[in-house]
Length: 479
Image (cartoon, rainbow, N blue to C red; front, top):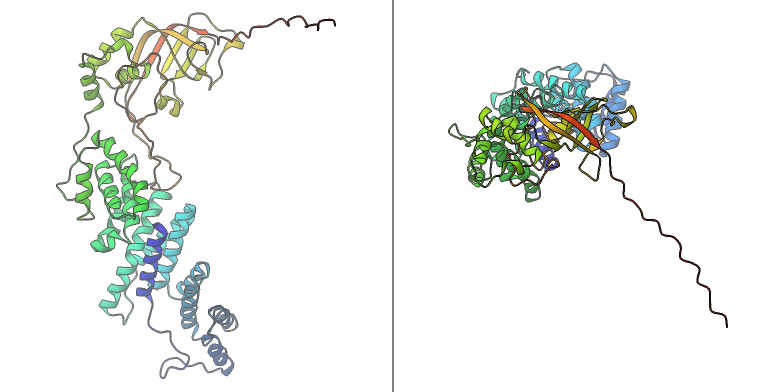
């Protein structure tokens, strides 16, 4: 979809930006080439029928006559020729040469921005992205040339300004990691489109806007992210809907808690690019509210909850609810399955939940009853499980809720394209079978650190392979 939409956009925009016919060599009362040799070279170059031969002849003319009075006209024609053979590298070089003569030439700026914008999207090279954005800013402030009518100037700017805003937004997201600024630029771009244009050439950047709103940080707004993902889903070709829908459902469920009502949002997004001022999505109950509801369920047996579920209640529950689960945990011995983050002879720090494992921070600290020998201290990264595997045990002693920290923007392989996990958190290995699962919580919220005393390590139980004595050799009967 991206290639098709962008290709169409460039074709439409460049068609709108094609200037009046280049000045001819001997237009009456305008420009005259007095040198016969230069005139003949000009005529030979400009009348070539084969595009490649024409480009070579025009380049030769500029090399031979670098100060020619028709230099600018030849560069315009050369740009047309390279465009005709789809040679973006030479188009960019030629546009740069035009800008050296005419720094505010909108067509040359547009082509330079478009090509660098495309390169930025492919390589994520910060300098390329910055260059595209700087040129785009210049294009947005370029003055109307003398002699250009208001109608013609409107056509030129209508074709070029959306691309300029898109390039600036892409630079904000990729190079500067400023997703709030990217949102403003993508919004400015989409506001320049008619509804029909927004459904086609504006669709890719509608997706980029949705993704910018989904990134954790100051610019995150999951309500708007859901709207724009729904808008893209509405108009994306059928083959791409399957790629958009998981993101749409993920962020809707993350904000709302479940998928009811999503079809209505898809229908509403058909009507307009931007959500109406009355658009709201009811948020899901808070983690504490979900936990409290779960704890009031008479069928839930608190001692039978998985270790990761107990930890979630301690981390996100209200003080009363956390104390309720702590009452059934305190002074109880338990295995602590998890990955070693740090270990000494007397203390082993372990990451139990998937969030803790991903962040490589300990959520369980086990103080050992008897110091380990140096050879028995587990290495960082070692995973304790339950017997017959190596098992770490301890007795619950204290817990501490750790407040949330400000989330940092996620780093993505593809700018504005955040990786979408299948669920909010991956399941952790339970210490005991769970009878209920607590709500999945985002990794950037508060957590808990649990301390155990009287810890000890049970070594892995090796399987004993029975040995069999060979049976006496069978001797054949004598004949």
